[in-house]
Length: 125
Image 1 (cartoon, one colour):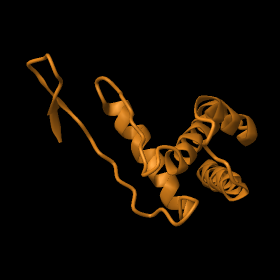
Image 2: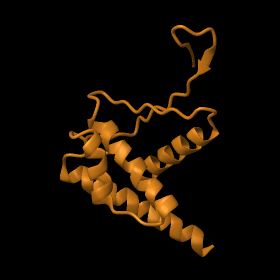
Image 3: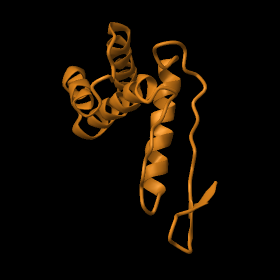
Image 4: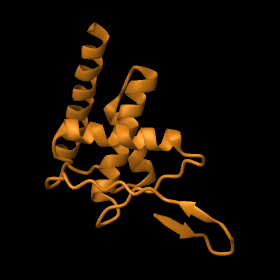
C-alpha cells in the first residue's frame, strides 16, 4: 500500500499486518501470536525507517495487550530475562486501560512460556 504524505512530493510504502485469529478477550493461539510478533519484528528490522502503528477496534483492548506481548517477547529475546508484571505496568503507564483483566495477564504469561519452550527447543538442537 502506498500513501502520499501531505506537503511532500514522494510516496512512502506502508505494510499492513492484519491478525484475524483474535478470540474474545485474548489473542487466540499462543503460537500464532508469537508468529505475528516475529513477523512484525522482521518487518521492522527490514524497513528503512521503522515506524509502527498498532490499532484495534476500541484503541486499547487488543492493541494494549499486543503491545505488552511485543515488549515481553523483546525482553525475552534480547535481555534473556523477563518480568511480565513490570513489562505490563510499563505499557499501562503509557495507556492505563491496557491489560486490565486476569485473563489478559494469564495470556501474557502463556505467550512468554511458549516462547521460552520454543527457545529451549532450539538451544537443545
